[in-house]
Image 1 (tube, helix red, strand yellow):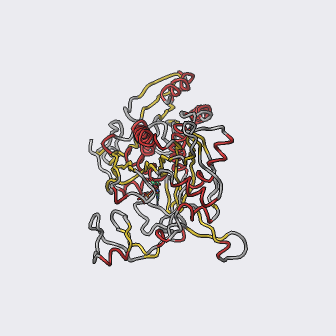
Image 2 (cartoon, rainbow, N blue to C red; image 1 turned 90 degrees about the vertical axis):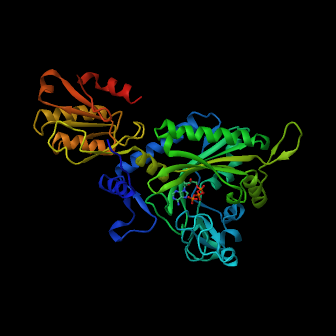
Length: 445
Ligand code: ATP
């Protein structure tokens, strides 16, 4: 079996099978913007649900939030996103996307990326935040930003969650939601977009426990990817070096995935120190500090952040699961000369769990198959398909990662049995219709 991956093939599969479409496509598209089609919604929703389960169901002290996209301007002043350092003219490396102060590069006579030697964009006065206006008048007073990260909504609700949930340190607050950034160079499909979705969790702790929890979250997050089937050799942790750390960060590590375009960040784990709660206390005038019961002194909790992107993860899961079989896996049909694609997604992530395929479009097979599909639909996402040859239909399901295909044939009418085909082993098992639900529930557990 030969494997070959490249981004164009993935992009084409995503478009053809309805995972991801270019945004505003009939008007020529919009740079850095994509739409999720029916299968993409399912897949990314499964990614989000796996994260929610891990964070909120398996940790009794992590609480879920859904804060608004629009917040007071002051939030972004406190976070530092609108201060001078963030709006200086910058040049971005087209290759590694690191950004540099244009004036610094000019001073040192540097015209290539100091980190990787890549080409640099022209200098741009750069504020990552996307602006809009609230209310009928468009002036400075009505200016608001679409959030550049979900984390700030968590900090401003720190006291609300803590008090309403009777939480005490250590505890976490997490949320899934859209974020917007005016990226200079969006690209690599859904890897770097201008509108994207984040899954962020902020874990609030005593300062003395920062190193312990930083290590713990690194392990937990890495394990989450492996458990969902990402191949070990395609994942790595990359600690930030001192000069690379954000001004507020005490330590940071990226979880990187080996994409067809190289190793790139999919999630960041950061020790943000007490920057966030101290700044929001200062700017809002509300006290977000805690009391140390031992010394009686007040302190601002430290934050260990785990920050992942839904879109980058969705892309990583697709890339990792994508396999090409040259010459085909099917030996029973004639059309075996082409390349077959199998998306070996973990069952929990597969957008469609079961396909029901009658061997003929005629009655009573169709009725029987539709009846099976509608029963299974109560528990799982099921596709019914009676078009094309059975070989083609199997391949269509393999290509979108459907773990099980159930074929209904002429014998099914007499013996009330169907054939269940496993995506990965291609083994076919004949079984009674009445036993299907238990069998599949067991397999998809
Ligand atoms: P990069 O260096 O690639 O721009 P970042 O370090 O700015 O990323 P963070 O601010 O740490 O990213 O954001 C946390 C996560 O949000 C990232 O790991 C990524 O998964 C996701 N993310 C950030 N920017 C984008 C984007 N433009 N498009 C899609 N996902 C993004």
